[in-house]
Length: 181
Length: 117
Image (tube, rainbow over all chains, first blue to last red; front, side):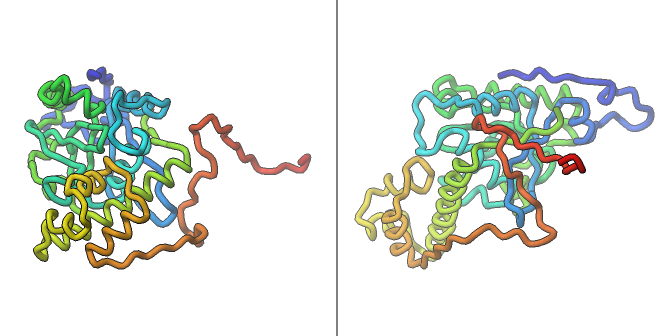
């Protein structure tokens, strides 16, 4: 999957005064990002925010339509794994227990990976507790084709295209840098 | 599109979140015991199981049976609480959708009744 991100007048750097820096709301209004959620129980409120590029959302729809990894590891379907991953992220559940058991991992270039046994999701944190997903793929496919570096470069390029690399991007590489719970 | 709900079937959602919750509870207990000095090797020895098997269960790659859950709780010296209760709908809480947008289920559209109805 590669970025195909629309830009509109909202993101036009035609502002006077301070250097242009879009807000998250403007990124959503322009179509660059889509807000993503899952159903929470009546007593639950979202503790974190999740966004995705239009291409990432198209991949999610592909999974909802029944796509599955060629050699699944887990006993849950890919859609079930993603639902639980998004639920634990949005509801504020712990994501990192130690180096071995963690559903979140830092890559270079301020890129982060959310993971389940069969699924890998790559993106960056717009702000603490606010993740923007760019790529989703099967864990086996990413390992077999060594896609990590390409994803890191593409995500950094996207941030630069959106002119948010300096502002809407958390640079730390520890879970505490990007998660408050 | 400005909003997307990742909406799996309610039955799948119930299963996925129960399994995820059990796994997170077990991991929390494992980390607490590790802080107190219990290694994963010692945990495996208590259970007379392979460390790799336990790791696969904790990582979500292998299913945990009720027997396996009870054994892990025993080895970690934890009580298990099980309760099935009807959903509560106190006033002022969010009301979840009654229908799913996936699984080829028709979406139920509710309109106010008119005098003709």
